[in-house]
Image 1 (cartoon, helix red, strand yellow):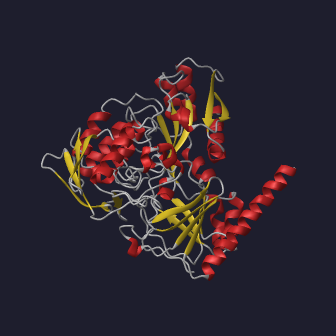
Image 2 (spheres, rainbow, N blue to C red):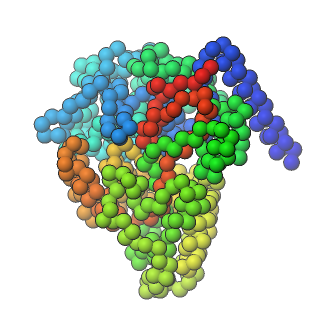
Image 3 (cartoon, rainbow, N blue to C red):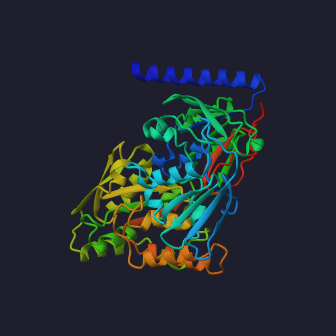
Length: 501
């Protein structure tokens, strides 16, 4: 009990000090954004990968490209790019005069070093996303020539915020130090980083688009429990926070701005077809038919999400309508499939490994739904869940993805043999490689692009390794003092954002 009281006192002290810091900044006329958020476990984008933390890292790092409100690639560090006639080489033309916050030049050699490190570093979370890149050449100071293993018109989308947040090559000589302290060329530079406590950043005057950055200071503060996020914003302790669906109504009632930011989010049940009992396709089909997606929507998203049986929300260009509802909720059919496969009720016993509380409700739903068809599931919490997941050591797990700017990257991440979200590596469904190759070879402005992309989704959904459940928008809550966010799918763009002092 004493420990709990000390913890509560520490939280109160942290909030009080944070409030004082913010008040001082506001009194001086400095524009400060105070964001309640889960602090990054990794500050090196190569190690962090393309998960949701890339939004935080985008404060300190800039990427080769960005996307606009329609999901199209637009210039960032690269002011333009062009393909050769064959489509197997793309040259990015960097803006002149760019520098990292350590003073090192951000030139073609620096981009080359980053991409090569992302492909080869032992603990890289990005290597599986870069299989189309054969080599990178620095041609002079400003031209980055990317030679491809195949024709691939997705590269400008691929090398955006999730994959190509460029790091200083000097800082990257010590990857462990970089992972603790970012050195990039983003809109802000870290001035103080106390793990588990706070991260302070100030505006980077040398950012390529600094004229459109209107915030002087950002304070990242540990996210409180869900129940106190709203009160923290209402009392001015925070200006901005991620919001769980359960708190939407409370935030709206408090007069705060709730932002439903578009995204490519999708959650799934991951099974390992290389391990019993999922080596039997009938058992996988039984899990598919035992899954009631609407229950996930109701209990996890509070109705703000949508059921999905694909790695995309239903309105997205890559969503394949032909594949919709291929395995409808049918628990009686699931029971028959298990019986035909030779399994009596209760004979299959599985561990469902999750990282922690964020997946608890989903895990309980899976446990209940599979129990209803005769599969016994024990939920196990492993704080190091990501390591065994990417090591492909689990039999059953849960995962959610924020999606990618490149829909082909999303597909290969889920269904490809090296996909970080494919628990069953190196398994991939028959025909998937050919279908994805065709989607890659299709220019983004081609009238065949949507058709070929959806065909690749259809081929991927033949995979027995994933059972998709629901999608939901990214939900944020902000003080009315913070201006409107640009509706960029999956991202937060800091340009144009304002906070009243």
